Image 1 (cartoon, helix red, strand yellow):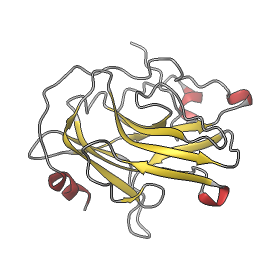
Image 2 (tube, rainbow, N blue to C red):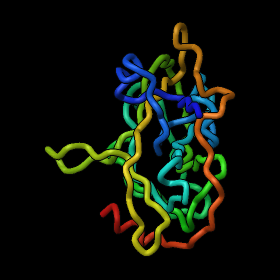
Image 3 (tube, helix red, strand yellow):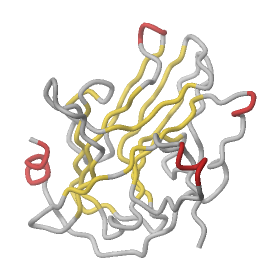
Length: 211
């Protein structure tokens, strides 16, 4: 089988050495909840972006939470403004997705036959242009002086709720010129996962993993 991922990894040099299998669970920033387009934000037009988790292969049984943050998006000082909203039925999300990061918890096990699960939606209003901006999903920050964490997904294996690491993907915001083609547009981005049974859980159980 062949797998083509829509966005680059931080270790982009791997692509210059040899073909690399990208069959690993990941978190990325996309222009739609199905992870089929890269983010494109026109000027003075409220636009939606999504942080989406890829479940294949180790999280195909479903997830009940995630931990991550976003790096290198244009800031308010550049006249870019964001409103982050959690999925329906999910408690308000603590933390700052652009700062120390945040943890997302679902009320039930989230699975997907397409192999992707949207974690949050972000409405963006851009008042200044930004092209070819590389943005990335990273792990939550730790205390000062400690190494940065990597993104994590929480499995549905109650009562353990195992936290596993995930790849943080890079994507190019508003690509132009030589970077005008986004490989995930209109293409299947990931391997699919088989359907599985749903298990109930609670925010309290998952939150303990991130404290």
